[in-house]
Amino acid sequence: MKTALITGASSGIGKATARIFAEEGFNLILCGRRKEKLEALKAELEEKVNIHLLTFDVRNKEEVFQNIENLPENFKKIDILINNAGNAHGLDPIQQGNIEDWDAMIDINVKGLLYVSKAVIPQMTERGSGHIINIGSTAGKEVYPNGNVYCASKHAVDAINQGMRIDLNGKGIRVGAINPGLVETEFSEVRFKGDKEKAKKVYQGFEALQPEDIADIIRFVVTRPYHVNIADLIVMCTAQASSTIVDKG
Ligand code: NDP
Ligand code: 8X3
Image (cartoon, rainbow, N blue to C red; front, side, top):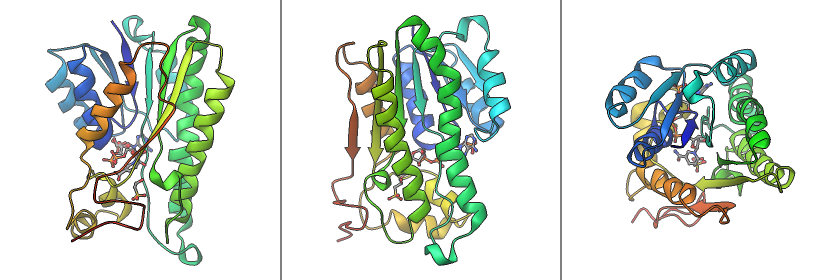
């Protein structure tokens, strides 16, 4: 039976992926800071598969390594790593950007992803098997107005995804990225610091992607035969043509 570690499993894309992986019978290591959300998800899924929760902040490298190195015996072998934890913080022109927001995006989306990867990759190279999926974004493929540092963080994920695939080539490990466009999750609520009305407006007037749409694609990616690696995928809703071109009727 396979084991998958999903960061950012308390909400949105990560949570939907946990649900779909449970249908596949994968044992799950679910990570996030909000323990009560993870516990609710565990209660929902534990009839189907074994679940272990880790409640570290990906910014805290000691916690990341300690938690992953001290996994219980039956969760130690990680077959699939979903590097998903991340968010945008703010949407301001660079000259008005908030330094704390910049730190959060670089520290979580880039450095956090690296810490978790560094903690998991050695066991994969040792075994000569594993699958890493990095959740990038259309923001990692193009820059949009006021997206500056969030876009930079996702361009970094794009580069790290390529770098991982190059460096891990020949070691039996599949590496790929999924780059979604607009997905209706808590993403905009976090970006706008809890302003639910403002967040809701981002997805009004068109049919946005749902987290289940991305989870379904992740399932497809991880269930391909071993010789097939989906290296880099951009997924938008039909109404979206680019970060700034969205048909709202
Ligand atoms: P959500 O806000 O719904 O989920 C974000 C997840 O990341 C939560 O589970 C959150 O858990 C976790 N997370 C955030 N900060 C930290 C942290 N410091 N330490 C540990 N976990 C953290 O957003 P999405 O599901 O939309 O986002 C998931 C990924 O998808 C992100 O990388 C995002 O950039 C990317 N993405 C999203 C798109 C969208 O339009 N929604 C489009 C393209 C990419 P907790 O708060 O419990 O720690
Ligand atoms: C999330 C999608 O367009 O808000 O990465 O940057 S977008």
